[in-house]
Image (tube, rainbow, N blue to C red; front, side, top):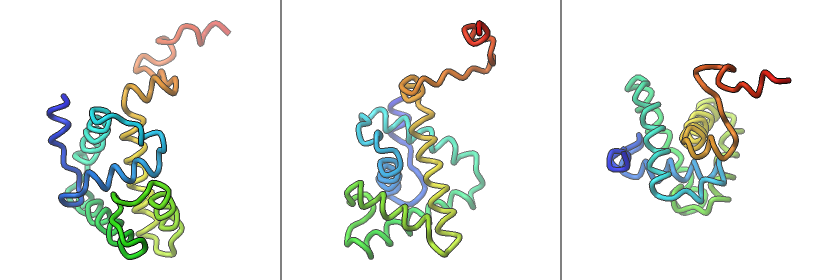
Length: 146
C-alpha cells in the first residue's frame, strides 16, 4: 500500500502534495508529527475522496491550491509549503474570513479534506477513541449495560 500511496498526486500541479501537507499541518497541528508512511496514507485518503468528485471540482480544488500558493507568496514572500506552520494557519484563517465567498468556500473545502485525511487514518481513530462500526451499537455491548 505504501508504494501505491507514494504515487498519489493531488490536484494543484507538481507542488500539490506539499501544499496539501502544509494545509494539513496548519489545520491539524498534530499532523506535523506524521511519519512519511502516515502522510502517504492521509494523501491516499484525500485522493480517494477527490476521485469520487467530478473533474470540474478537482480542477477547482487544484486552482484554489495554486491561489493559496500565490497569496502566500504575495503576503510572505514564500510559497505555502515553505511557510512556518503558524503563518500558514494565519493565512488560512484570514482567507476563511474573506469578503469573497469563493475564498471562504475554498478554505473550508481544503480544510475538510485535511481533516478527512488525518482523522480517517486508523491510527488517528484509535488515538482519539473512535470506535464506530457498521454493526452499530451491537458492536459495543458495553454501551447497553447502563
